[in-house]
Amino acid sequence: MKQKILLFLLGLLLTLCIADATACRYTVREIGYSRAYASPYQLLLPMPEGFPEALRSEAEKLCRTALGDANISARLAGRRERDSLLAAHSEPRDKENEALLISPHGRILRYGIPLTLDTWKSALWDILDWACLSPVRKQINQQLTQSFCVVLLLPGSDSRENALYQARVEQSILEIKKIMPSLPKPVSQAPALLILNQDQMRQEDVLLWSLECDTQTAHPRAAVIYGRARRLGPVLEQETFTEQNLLSLLALVGADCECGLDRSGILGLMLPSRWGGGLQQAVADELGFDVENPAVLMEMEQILSLNAPAPAGHAKAADMIASYREELVDLLSPSAARSTAERPAPATRSLRSIFLISFLGIGCVLALAALGLHWKMKKRKQV
Image 1 (cartoon, one colour):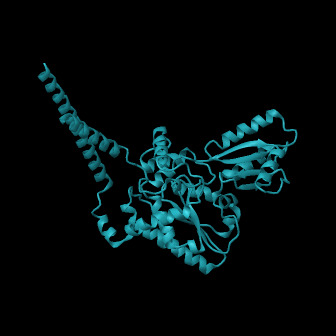
Image 2 (image 1 turned 120 degrees about the vertical axis):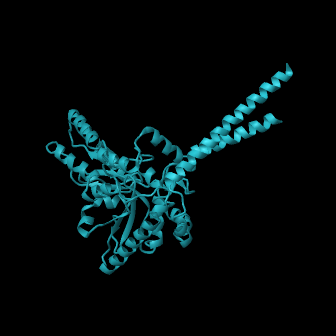
Image 3 (image 1 turned 180 degrees about the vertical axis):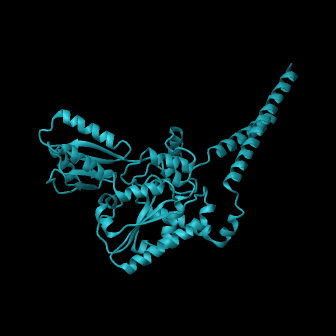
């Protein structure tokens, strides 16, 4: 009987140790910096008639070099293949030997500078830069290495309405700053607000297309971008562009990945862009660890696979906001604000975790020792 009790206690102690040791150590923001479930964009390049095989190899090598740190894969494709792809998506046929940029969701954006035998190299560079590089995308990436996230505001046609929604965004940022110290892992820099003007909106066709904001509208829109240039949730517009919805998305960025959310909504679709070593090092300095470390990436992917498959889109974005709103209201309540000062700091929580693990470890050792002593005494009695 004693032996069974000791075995039960030993199993319980080991279970508690494992449960505490395997608790999630990352926030949504931190996991967003990783390449986990990062489906690439596809870039199909027009192949000129009579393009020599040697030039084709050179072009493909140039693509690999130029896109080595981007989430885009490029290859040459003949006219028949491109027309077949366009037909499958109910798009009109290729008329100008265009390059086709295809999102992970299957949306297609065309680029109208064709490759020719005489100008193929300069035209290829233009196409590659168009696909993965633009002033605003570069600015977003720089902000993401140090800020909590980026709120991208796309103005409408009415200046008074634009001012109203800008004030709404600014108020949401002020509110999230109040609760940032009480988030699982506090961040020093508040969300950055980036407002595009009309000239930028005309030039940033790839950015707007990747956000699915390439259709004309008279009303302001906003998108929350976090981590490695991932969009979180839906683009907010008109009735969904409320302070509460925006605040819910902002709070979600700082949430612990063990907060009960559907993990299929944690990883948003990345913008097509370059993410070089300088940006990655800046993120590592900010977080205190490298998300590109294979062990860290493996742990993050394991966490994401516990309750949900790889995200297949953003169909659950509205549900994701609604599910988090109740927790957000509790967090913003006066009682929560008063309890913020009483909440243990991250270092204190870490010390308590270490103490708990140490205590449980000692308990395991004592249980094993008691079990061994019991077995030894029983053996002596038998002799």
